[in-house]
Image (cartoon, rainbow, N blue to C red; front, side):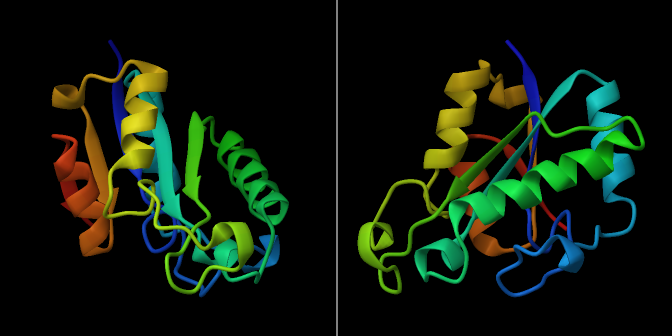
Length: 151
């Protein structure tokens, strides 16, 4: 089994920007790239779990978000760090448009993204940790039995 460090994205690894998708708007929170590298170096899978209501609302596309995620990994690579996987929820039960207006199991505080990552990466939750900046991040991690810390 693997151990994992789960991170929320907005407000946890990058400075909060409402509906971030533009590369030029990305700014890492000080010390976070180095923290990610520390977990990489210590054998943890580093996994992002992020609600992306901007997709649901039609503000940007899934491809816009994937482009930003590729850029995040390119920036982390400069210090020898990386994110193993990005899990995202593009849904919103009230403000979603079209196929994105869904009351899903992946939107935090529901645990769907974390549960999928646990399955995909054979994660030992007792050896794992989650970092988030919102109550719903912590709730989702705790529902999966993961030590969850507010940053």
